[in-house]
Every structure is written in C-alpha cells, then in structure tokens.
Length: 261
Image 1 (cartoon, one colour):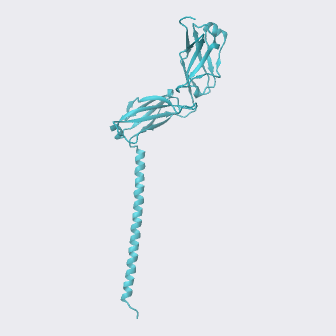
Image 2 (cartoon, rainbow, N blue to C red; image 1 turned 45 degrees about the vertical axis):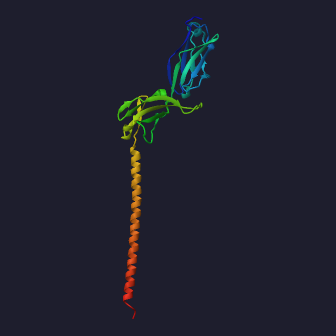
Image 3 (cartoon, one colour; image 1 turned 90 degrees about the vertical axis):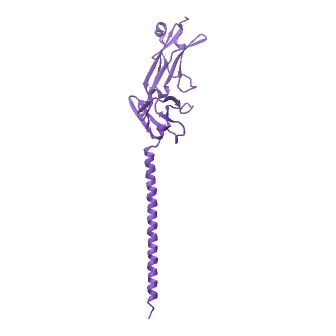
C-alpha cells in the first residue's frame, strides 16, 4: 500500500426520477484490494441515521479490478427515500478508507408542486416580527426559497428539517425572516417565494389579511342586520298593541255616553 492510497467516487451528484436506476463508481487508487472488500454506506440527511446499502448489485468483473480498480454499484427502481449521500468504504487491513461521497437526489415526477404554509404571530410586541415559511412535498435540495417584503427581496434563513425521528419521517424546508414591526403593523405584503423546477410558487401574508377583514366586516353587517330586524319587529309589535288599546278605550267611552233605553 502506498502513501497516496485513496478512494475516489464519481459522479459527485446523481439525479433520477422514481422508478429509475442509478450507478455510482468507486475507484481504488494505490490499494491492492478487491471489490468484495467494498461496502456502500448511505448517510441520509436526517441526523443520526447511518445505513449500509442492501439489495445492490456490485460489478466484480476481473478487468475492473485488475486494470482500473473500479467497483461500481447500481440501485434499481429507486424511490424518494433512496435520496442521500453515499460513501464507498474500503476495508484494508485494520483501516477503512472512505470515498469523497456521491449525492443522490430522487425526484417524484408524479407529485404535485410543493405546498407552502406561513406561520405568523397574532400580535407584534417587539421591534421585529418573525415569519416562518414551511415548504413540504419536495426534497429541500430541489427548491430555492426567498422572501419579497413589499417587493424587496430578502433571502431569509433557510434550513431543512424532519417531521419527526421515525423511519417514516419526511424532510421539508423552512425559511425564517425577521420583519420590522413598523412594516408589519402598517400591513406590508410579505411573500414567501419557492422556486421549483423553473417555476415560482408563492404565498403572501399581511398583519391585517384582507380575507380576515372582509370576514369581520361581513359578520358585523350580519349582526347589525339581525339587530335592526329585531328592533323593527319590536317597534311594530308595540305600535300594534298601543293601537289596540286605543281602539278598546274609545269603544268603552262611546258606550258610557249612550245609556240603553
């Protein structure tokens, strides 16, 4: 084994759609080793998860091993859960050599565009207001998220996270931005923009959403309408009762003025 022993992987990035096949290559430079000593490890983006590949096909043709020291690996019928960073690990004596890694991105072409949800505070008590844009339905590496505050672009702070710590957890993107309280209070339009496969999807929020204002105004008019109708009905009822009493009183007076013969 030479001092320049190393493990090289290529390509650095592989993109495929669900149901397709991918192939990664591991080249053993300066190592007198064989492909059966090679293990492929998948490191998902979810923290704490490390898995050794199973159900993969490793090409062990002698010409690769003798002349090129190349050990390719293929994964068939990939799914979105196959996305992650793959490392070629070579066991040589009591040492393990790792490759430079290959990032695998599996896209689901049948899925709808990503969904956007914006979390906003009910009230602003500080000098700035925190807005959180949640983007789900796609892998974080497939989207670019930024904000438009009354037309002014702001990158915000983007990070990827997971719904939970289980094996069935899904990864999503979140972007946080701080908006000045005076901008928020005057009703500035805060738009979360998601760039996905050449398309732009967005959602806008304001301190006083027009839809909320409309709902409040409509509800107020309904209440006023009901109150007005009740007052009108009450007024008519009182007038009818007073009219009836007035008529009865007139009849009694006329009867008293004309005694019977």
